[in-house]
Image (cartoon, rainbow, N blue to C red; front, top):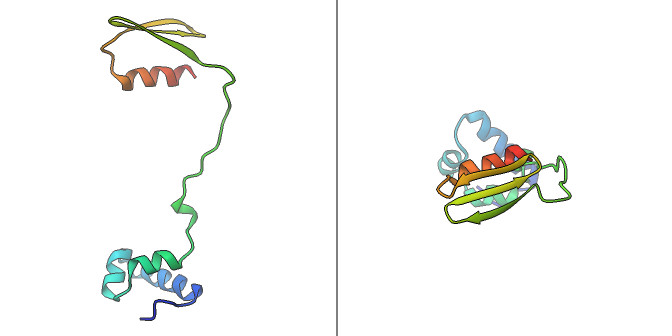
Amino acid sequence: MNHSLPEYDWLRLLTHQKESGLSLVDYCSIHNISLDSVRLNTPPTKSNFIEAKVIRQVPEPICQVSTVPHVITLNTLAGQLTFPATISSDVLVNVIRCLS
């Protein structure tokens, strides 16, 4: 198969691949088409991107973090929170997210 097809032929090829029910890798393998050629010759679809939006901007820090041996203290708008230094970073991050 000619790998320098016009763009509309590549799009038709992708449509045929989707209708076949085969994965792109399997379809290309069966039809002896370079997977890289398909990816380079077809425009990206919106589903390839993650759209991110800024919901709000925080003009000042949400909290201050200070560490004392064996203790982590967060001074927040909600008050002072103290945690053992052994607290999981995931839990601490979740607490900070909940406060924002």
